[in-house]
View 1 (cartoon, rainbow, N blue to C red):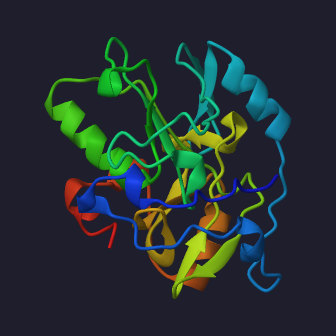
View 2 (view 1 turned 60 degrees about the vertical axis):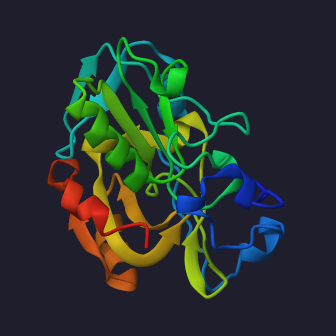
View 3 (view 1 turned 180 degrees about the vertical axis):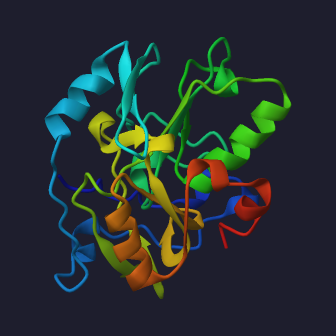
Length: 227
């Protein structure tokens, strides 16, 4: 698995409020420093891909139990997919990505799912949509326990790779998030998700931050991210 190449420029893809401060003009190949590489065993990737394509998807809980629910599976994001909040082309930028399905609604005027190049933006969007009466069927986040991710230095910041294939996602209620670590995504500090709590703890031990579940995330917490 490898990361997509960055776009030549990010400034035209987002609003001025969220202007990207990093230069994505160089190919991502230089990001792969051996000292920073983190290999993750891709257990269950085949099963994950099958579930993502199924109309009836198994959603797991943090205790390992699974229930079969009639919710759509995650989709692969392409260069046709822009973030609902900042307008950036999602695969062209680093960091965790997120998808949210809202039954009966059209996020930004298009079909589900709503798509995001950062998890904190997704939560912010979701809080606002819930205030409007929208119902979230499922939120999918990048599962860094299930991908071969990399951390790398860019303009003085430590960044983490992005992963946009359907099998790279997991339901948010199944993960432990590391929130506010020193590792950043496309929109600054973010929530980095791991389906294995031990992976989240190891990441926190190395990069700092706080361990939380999806139910712990509040608007106040989200307001502290993206910096």
